[in-house]
Structures are given as structure tokens and as C-alpha cells.
Length: 144
Image 1 (tube, rainbow, N blue to C red):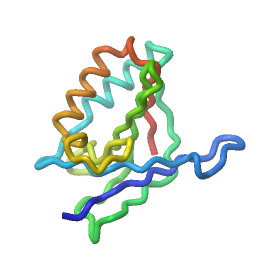
Image 2 (image 1 turned 90 degrees about the vertical axis):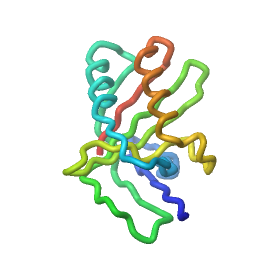
Image 3 (image 1 turned 60 degrees about the vertical axis):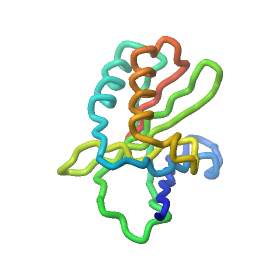
């Protein structure tokens, strides 16, 4: 089994160094595609009402690494980044296809532990984050 990694490169803001503007997401292990439209819509709607939830466009490029060939071609990408009050951070990468919509494809921080990247556990985490957003320091929805 080959592992797939996604390197997300963000646009430079001001005088920030290039090396600090990328995250590497590990592929989400799943036997089916997980549609993320509901989560994206919820976070986007919440950003209109809550100061700690923002959405903006800032993904410059996504580089797919570690696979000989990739079955899906993505139109655009979305990253959900969550900062907890204890400063712990987590992130999720979504790729959009014309036929299947917004699909969960990666998780961050990078981990080769497949238990941590099982899609059902990620969906449970996202449900917890959205329903308990007041206990979250910041949620960012970042588009390409």
C-alpha cells in the first residue's frame, strides 16, 4: 500500500517566510468517499455570526506526493483548520470533484498512524467541533 501525502502551500502574507506557509496532510484511509459539503456549509454560515470562525481564500497550490498515479482530479481544495483553547491544532483537507462534490482527502497534523486518520473518527471530531464551537479558539475555512 502506498501512502499519499498532500502538501498545501499558502500564499505569502506580508513578510512571512515561505517555509512557514505550508502544511502536509496525510491521506485519509477510507473504503468510501466522504462528502464534506455539510461541514463546509455549517462553518461558512457560522462565520457570519461568530468572530472566531473565519473563511477566506489563501491556498496557492496543493502538491500530491507519494502516489504513482492519482485516480481523482480535483477542481479546488478547502482546508479546515481548528485551534483549540489549549493551542492544540488540527486540520482537514477537502478536494472538490465535479461528479462527487467536496470530499475528505487528508488530515493534519501529519501522522502515519492510520487509526488517527480513519474517516469515521474524523467525522465524529468535526461534529464535536461544530456543535461545541464556543469551546474552540478559532476555526478557519481556507479556499484555493
